[in-house]
Image 1 (spheres, rainbow, N blue to C red):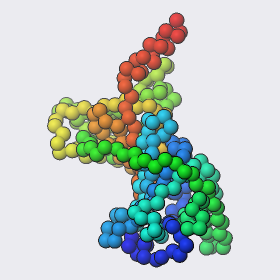
Image 2 (cartoon, rainbow, N blue to C red):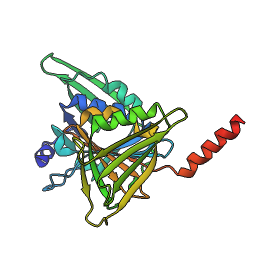
Image 3 (cartoon, rainbow, N blue to C red):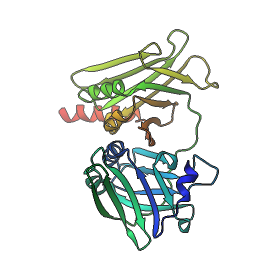
Image 4 (spheres, rainbow, N blue to C red):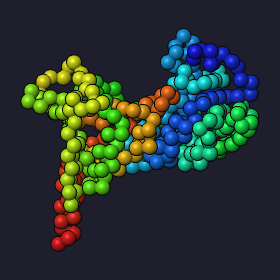
Length: 302
């Protein structure tokens, strides 16, 4: 299917991609704009015989360098996808995500979306919204940015555990904790006495919260790396503001996946409906930072 999408030459175009999954794409861009400001979007060409090649990717960190976003929407997941061979292996464009969303949010759920760049107008991204039933076509031109182009990569690693958890349950835990505290402790316990137990806990000035889930909890499943020994505890402390960044994407998938490993960022994978997936990568907070903050607060109150 991917090869078919690349075979139809598009005269006068550098790239073009189309989808009818407009509602999911709109939610995705809305979520991304809360994390990223100006970002490079890479469109990669389809390799003949490789059905998983090609597509739209983003790899970028937020302004505070505390969150890494890795997005991949494979070419095979679009209704149409084309990258002009003149572009080489890929074509990169710079986009202001807030401006992009202002145009994308005008889409109706039954519109067809096409993104394109004309060879004669490489400074603008074309955004075409078509509705065959209502017989209208709306076209926007979004000014592109010249941004430095450097790859932001997460080192390859074998995670100790992958936990699949219902998206609505995960986001409810995070939302409830956000009204109590600034930080969330996420602990996974896999010991002889307490196997496959996931614990979310936080402590604020007026209350504390603890939620315990196990592999007997409805919708939760645990996949263990075969190299992990018995009696293992994986634990990290995370900023709740970062954990709540992608709550808008919770409606795009029934389950999310948590990838856990000690002394390594927490990786949360969201399926973007049938379009692809996005990873939210969060570095753990040093516990000393919390202790120092508490000490400063106490000294200030004196």
